[in-house]
Image (spheres, rainbow, N blue to C red):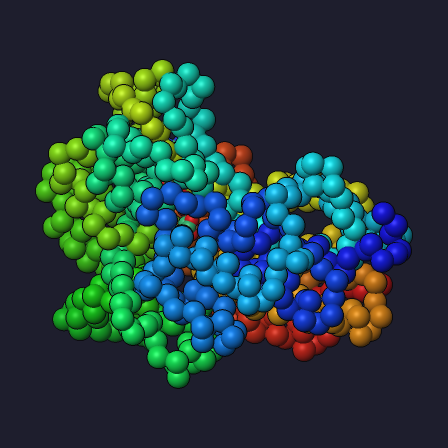
Length: 535
Ligand code: NA7
């Protein structure tokens, strides 16, 4: 393949979730020659992979969809929180409407990317030996692309099936047998609700309780929809005005500005709303003041403890003493989760009190006993935020890898670009508002930034765009400074890199809120990409 000829793409887009799909459509609309590749065999990103029973999004629609009227005018969701299957159907609909398939190659796992400084081109290699050349490398690998498994000894001995939920077999296994779920993140909670209803014996292995909130699903039947047509544009505009990119925001006052009675009434209202309201539509000091945070926990605990009959389970799931900062770990949305522990077929193992010793042929041996299982489901999460990017051997201008560059901690500008890696952007990754901003909102704001950057390069006849070292230091330091004002660093979580042994401890997400992030992107564009250097 020649580096100067027609084979060189304007951009190779890696990852066919919301971000990648948005970029294919919008870069192609601008006349660029682009290609979208993904390891999966269809669109959807995390939704392609996450097919486990109960998998569903924790953002409501229409927040969780593209804002293009050509799409929303024709598409009707069946639920307020759509399930994984419905989201895959949405992606298929988008692929047809936006005519994406002609420029997409599936079953393509990108393993290597090397920058050629003389030619100003990336050579990008797939695991099967195919290679691409592109002026821009656009990484949309998502925050949950690298799976994490427990390092228990003896895993290979187990005679039953051992599954990570994001590799769920396409033909559902028979789940009426004895099942273990490891982990109480959003995935573990969703799985537990479903599997506990079919398994003869269901055991949840918990390390940390999830301070889950009531989901309050709504089914849209007949003509019922999330919002009427006249409200869509306001919802989409509102996403950029709220901290979390959703259609609600923190209250404009502090917890103790209200009387106890007023506070109680507010908490009850937020609880009744369901969704993340009790987390992200509450008093604005909840994630910043310890006393405010404690107050929220007291209410949460009272609500949840009343739902669990067994005293031991109650204390493990909703401890009397607050276990960690409320909302400082990713909160799950639940519907009936706490009630499953009232069922006779359900047990809860506390791996802190009775640690796992080994996996055996028949199941899992803890310091208490050997548990027998047919299936062990490892809902143990991901090397979140950085794993999807560091999975790829990316070599920048100086020949160094991104893994080397980020060894002691992430460095980026705007949570999208990395110094020494010219003409490369990533989305929905570290140092952006990732997961504190729902996927489609980020896909559209970061995607438009990429389109603007490529247009700027074209209009100015530029070949290379790299990050200015000072801008990178400033952005990266600012991520930690903003985090330090909140309670989030005080709790162990994957926001802080704690779930992966050896990962540097630092805040991996931008906690300044979507409006400030969006403003930073827009200012950068308006100031002719201040913070970047050009050739
Ligand atoms: P998460 O949120 O990373 O949850 C993983 C869970 O697995 C969490 O409860 C962990 O406990 C637990 N875990 C991990 N390793 C172990 C071992 N060795 N033993 C016991 N328990 C363990 O992943 P999810 O897939 O649930 O969610 C990821 C995101 O996807 C979610 O936030 C949404 O945005 C969608 P811990 O809490 O670390 O003590």
